[in-house]
Image 1 (cartoon, rainbow, N blue to C red):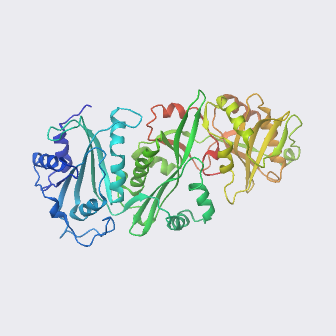
Image 2: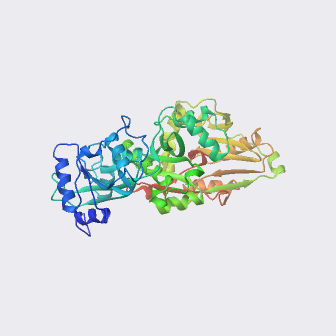
Image 3: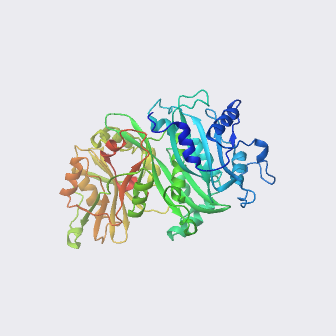
Length: 492
């Protein structure tokens, strides 16, 4: 690791001109090491007896931040042993005792990721994930993180992870059973729409590939913000599978949108907490379909990268042409009543032709298109009794949305028959256009869309595909081959 300054100088820079520092460590030997470190930096070392505060609950998380009369610590240096957790009660005590501008510096030995990676950024991330989660839940905001060279005052480490934090007005923690009541209220306030409880349970509790990741910002018992994500499984043409998260249901109360700026804003704090939480699930990267506002935020403050504007296709439907629409006789088109084993076999057969795509097996399809309150039209195409393609449609006002499709590349005309059947159905009667999200890959699929009279258009909401947190080094290259549809998002 290259370091422009010695580790001690880095610590002094983060402490600034503060007069007092406080050293703490709960493992044998670490408290003395922290004390020696604090003395080298030039602070006054206080003992743990000086932090006893009456009136805190067992967790020490719900106490009010005291005024200047009782908050008298300028800084705290905490040397944590490998894997040592941050006790919530101690964090609660420190939160009371640190001044509004005070700093909490947490040091921990660098550790490799579970994958064995020893690259600097990944080792740093692996070393601090649980620290970020604990600090967020205790009402601290992370200001900085960096890797330091070995420090001669501290034993047993080839390098150190440093997290710098200060007291913040909100706490950020993960979902707990019962939070959905407050989440529903904030959802209605933010999006001006009611969502049935069954739809929330379907989305976050019943997903077949694992439960939700939800980060929540609280002001006491008032929910002020949420950043959520659902799991994805992406299959490579050459074999293998990547796990990812798709961001969704991002919302904040107007009351907290002016708190913090950039990295210390409530949205940043929730996303950082979500990123740290996701580390437990071996997630390679995170994606989102973002509006212009959230896109600018992601690119500037969250290490996000823009892959491309969402690929939006539209076909205008003339009334006279609609009356002439016919599925033809080459393929038998049927409404899908259940997704069984033949859909698993079909996916395994055709997935390599799509390079990189979300796993669309029977388990996933059965969950995805059982969304409460949504009237889908699921159609399958057969040739001599063999499944050669399927598509999912939905009517929205005067628009027929082609939400998902998987077609055998040896039978591209099956897509034409599926579309014609949808246009001739009750879902398609009287529509003015057919729209869909379809990545411009693979090439044969793009050519087929053009043959069906679809044209690429700007996405009406100016959405773009953003990805970040790519501990998978080739995330950008992989996603450049991703075949996605609107059903890969939560907007269909």
